[in-house]
Image 1 (tube, rainbow, N blue to C red):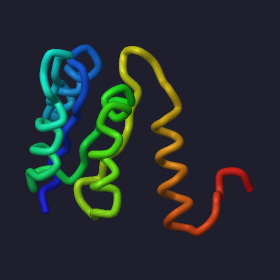
Image 2 (image 1 turned 120 degrees about the vertical axis):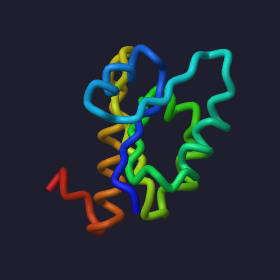
Image 3 (image 1 turned 180 degrees about the vertical axis):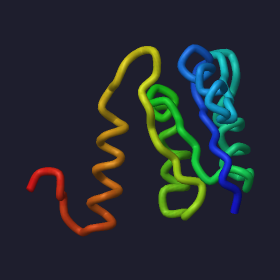
Length: 106
């Protein structure tokens, strides 16, 4: 399994991650980024894909298909439009599923 990391979202939110050595994939609103995201997930070169919360809101059904897969791990991050709280909510759901209870509220 590869240890490469990808970042997916709108250009303004993700282009800075390239400086960290991450592979950056961005789109504009005129593109069909559902197909691009599918192709990225099916590419076995990435073990982690960071995706902006705004893009994840549009790709919610597609992301759900990969939640039970061991790889790639899909992690939501805030974009330039701000933090919606969906990233924290997704982490909370994953931990609750793994542990069996909501340990954040105990």
